[in-house]
Image 1 (spheres, one colour):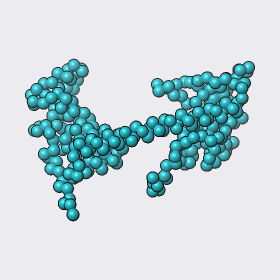
Image 2 (tube, rainbow, N blue to C red):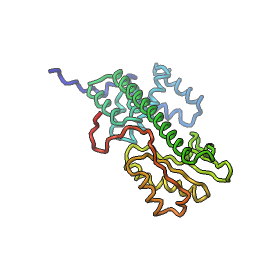
Image 3 (cartoon, rainbow, N blue to C red):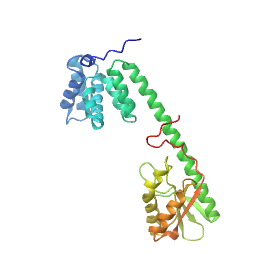
Image 4 (tube, rainbow, N blue to C red):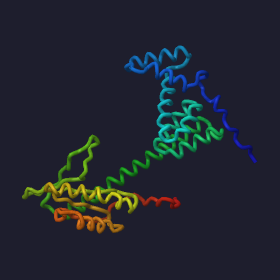
Length: 276
């Protein structure tokens, strides 16, 4: 049986010698406070020359100091422990924690226990980041298909007397509350398309129901016709129609359509074991 890995001597783990990278970063940060970009760079260069370090080491220490502040908001005790780890490890753990706190902290524990080294922490974080990026690319693709299916359903429902145009106003990311606007070719009438979701769980529709319907009612109250397109599953259309019948005075201007919308695979409920 292999011996258990020896716990790392945390006090000897920084690579900058004395003072530690943490103390150095605090000194540099205080010295650079209130100075512009050029002044900051001068301070970094001065400290690097005095300590016999590359200026990039000073920048790395400052980044790690900022990373500790981010981790402190999640776990103050763990942030205190990070001060005794190398700046490169701190930067990796802090970056990782931004999108997967549990995995990042587990890797930190294994590093402190001596089970993995600096390079392995970096490798695992890179792999996790790629998986995370792949997931969001996958999500973006599904969101695009989901909305396209909804658009096709709405257009087929309205028939040829309507033409499509963008539905503003838009935010800085080019997105707005409604997916599309349809303008009638003869009458002075517009119809807004509202495509809620996709939501991974049926309970999310219940949680978002008020927000969805109030958006539609708000548009209808200023003269728009509104089409809401939802997935043909889990009684979503019926749930929204009950809300509409109960609360909306402008319900005659709001229609709810259901259709097959391509969605993400179902996520397990809280506490439910994953089968993948």
